[in-house]
Amino acid sequence: MDVRGESRLFFCDPNRSDQKGRIEKNHTLIRDILPKGTSFDNLTQEDINLVCSHVNSVKPAALNGKSAHELLAFTYGEEIPKLLGISKIPAEEICQSSTLLQHKF
Image (cartoon, rainbow, N blue to C red; front, side):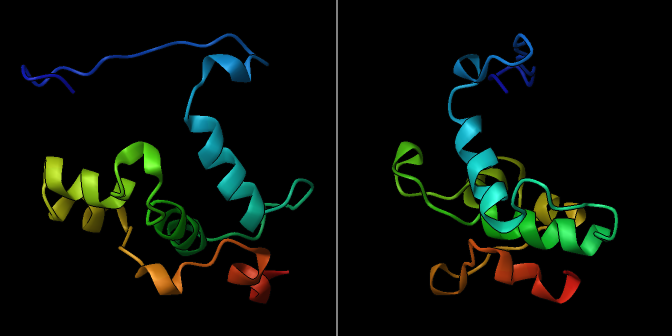
């Protein structure tokens, strides 16, 4: 969002990962937890929230050592992640493997 409270929206062509910039890294992190070929049919909203919580708690160098969760909470307030069902995972507890949801598969 910019200072006027307006969002900027960007469009990408299908099958053009080179147009998506850093979002592809999140896709990679999600696929570490839910490998390609994994069925999403039995995932609950709580499972998705758990995956999002772990992915968004990673602190990439591109965000100056801040996590996406921290930036969201700082920018829009602590209530927004709570409303979305996403929580901050301590760095030493972040799981980026399929063992996060091993009870499902």
